[in-house]
Image 1 (spheres, rainbow, N blue to C red):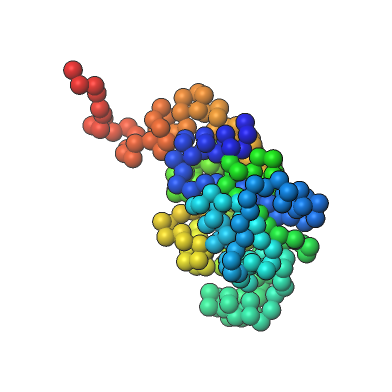
Image 2: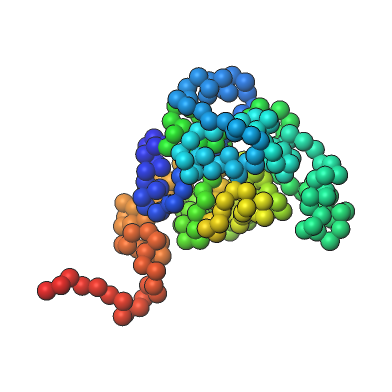
Length: 258
């Protein structure tokens, strides 16, 4: 299947509210040039903003968004992307969450961080990247049961159990994707205080990140289940996410009118 076809299946079968986001971290100039030449239309931030705000264009508006460091106004994302090191400002920004500045420094240093040399980042709806690039990560903003279905399919497809997500302070969208890229593992985490406000996750969405190299296997597992019956794990046979009732309740049953 093309990525466009995959997106259609995911939107329909998982009842997604947002487009899945295909993220590409560009370290190679020739790859970046090829992306700019092939993309039908690229949007860039008018003013510097957070990474999770970049993703709004992709997941809500269906836009292909690209920017380098000049369009990023979030120090947490800059640190995660290897565009800055730890400094007093970064420690101070985390100190409100920690017991003392020393703990804040240790916590920051324990975060996943890309190597130096990142040229820029593209975020786009999964269905828009055919012919543009292979995603490094695929990021879903979804609800609890959608996240559970993605996690179960990933575990089955990659023979991984249990999953051990990585939750860090102040860096859910940015740091969460960097962790998934570097560790090549599934990640599932709540919005951080920054992305909840800046990223507009007021619906209580959960972040799910899947490595691009393992996304195909996860999707194939979903298709296998669909072909066997339905995409729903919680109530097989129903459309996802299944009836929002106890699956064995004998009272909530419907029949055709005589």
